[in-house]
Length: 467
Image 1 (cartoon, rainbow, N blue to C red):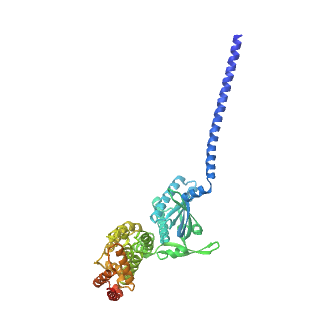
Image 2: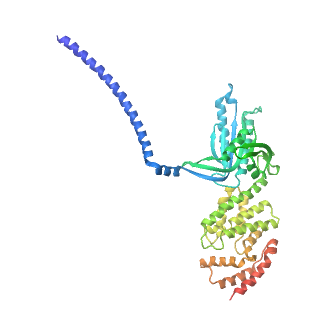
Image 3: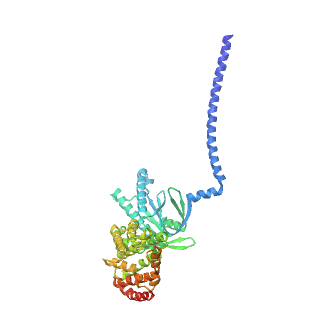
């Protein structure tokens, strides 16, 4: 009887053990489901919190991470780097992708070199834009130069990889210039997403382009034809706008090419291009003067700087200066009073420091920068020029002495000195002016011809004002 009861007990225990194991397995499954539900619940809560935060929070976040800008003149480049090898049975797809990575890496470097913003890379399509985020007048030339360098690089790359002359990569480009809308995204790493007809036209130009061709719209052509050898290609129908004339860029013009292939610019190109780019430098410097010059500088202000820049070009051309000398003169004139943003005393020296900091960004050579700085220093009073360029900038800096507006300009200089307790009465100032003008002489033939007669008349006018 005992034995039978023990057997029943053992069976019951075994059954309970099996049931317990089954319950444990079910419990594990339930725990897993609970964990999954908890994760999903947290995601839903986070989503709800974002929704509940409402439009204000959304707009606040949008203002930090994304904003929209409009650029009036941007040059957009679409390039296609295509190969059929990856589709063939014999093709080594890994090797092809490695080559594509190398090519795109070099395209990134070229874009950076020309200060062109890379927009995105989609497969084998490389898109970039000049004039973003810093607006400039030179972006059409910058982008075409970048396209020529990309094409040259790819040709040389193919020759190194395949000495047998076989060409694996097909490269074509479309370029168009016009206004764009740009969505600025990101906080740490800024990205630009551009849209508009300009982008669409550049993309369509790339589509109709052929292997090795760089096609540009008539808008871009008009802005770059001075530098590049181009030929008419045809017309591209544009919805609601009629036909868009298209040109093919063959390369730099012979007078601007250093390599015989029309891809590497020479000194003549850099100087002529520098004269165009001067507009961008001038805008930057004048904006800085507007913001940073002390309010009591009634004479050494933006107007005076513009006057001197204009005058050095006028006298320089009359004196037979070369294009490079005109560029150097205008640059020195632009920077000659920037030092006033730092201090009134020794402002010429401070101006050279600002020039040395900024000009390398605009590809001025070390020799050009040294010459600019020496011209700035030559404007110190009393003037003692030792070269024609120094004579020109000194005459330009004191051009007002022989102008019809001498009296109001002279009075503005008086007010400037008086505000700094460097001058007493106007009568005292007029006496000082008579002494200064009587001892002053213009150095260049052009300035003497233009201003010397009026300068003598100014002396008589000021003497009549002295009591």
